[in-house]
Image (cartoon, rainbow, N blue to C red):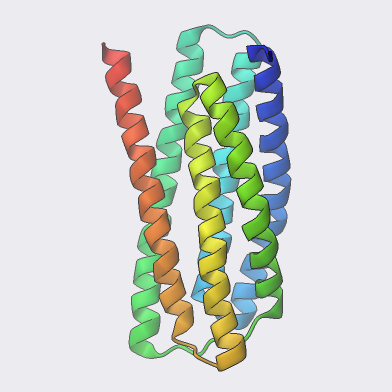
Length: 210
């Protein structure tokens, strides 16, 4: 039977591992997106940066609890982490929808991206692993922020597969319209993620007032 301290240590380890991967993922995705003029890859890279910020905030929150802070300090850190996540996801959603509609209207040229394909495949597999571990530990710790971060990791996995479909379509079939369409698919998952995180923030605020 694991103690709460052991669960916190495990959660920190998984968050740090996720952060290390997301640094690599963000750099490679943004580079591939820039070279290929791909909104899907750029949006995926931007989401990686948001996940990186969210994971870093969550590490801060877990370290506060690991140092033995009182419940009010932990709750404050948890609420602040969740609010930042909602705000950042909302900004990304606006970028993806606006960019995708602009790309569809202007028929922007998108180039094939072998690097993007590789990054998407690796990310799709790794994020499933991260999401499962974060959710398990979030339930064990009764941590709203950790469960929300697990949802973000699931979303990142779905985004990777959606982006992979668009990138493969551009590479194999030269269907450049698949890039903004896959970006809209990514936007759908961002919207779901943002809404779920918002609901968690509202529930946490309601609980604090009771």
